[in-house]
Length: 112
Image 1 (cartoon, rainbow, N blue to C red):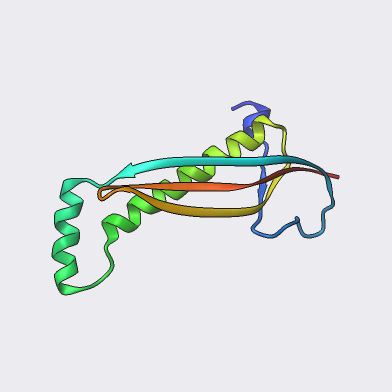
Image 2 (tube, rainbow, N blue to C red):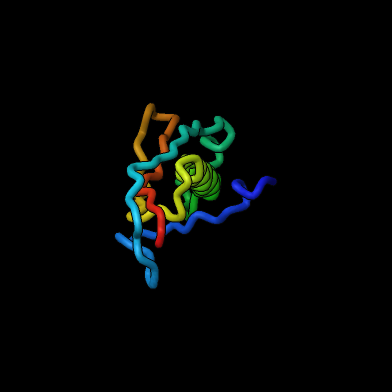
């Protein structure tokens, strides 16, 4: 892993980084992924829906999608030499009845 890849990018949902000053606003960065459900997961989830409880298959699918979207956003921030991404948000949307998009976005900044 190169030094650039190993460099940590700070992520925060606030408009700044506590205890740090923003020297320069780089701009909007985002990462997204689209994930489709597996037919086997659909069958297990449908059965679980009958008796109640957490649909672990879908929870796992969405957790992986969130991590991938965040990783892609961080990669875009690194490519722009950002130290942090502030005001980070996550959104999901349904593409089809079997696929969901997860988007991570925020503002890349250089810290003083």
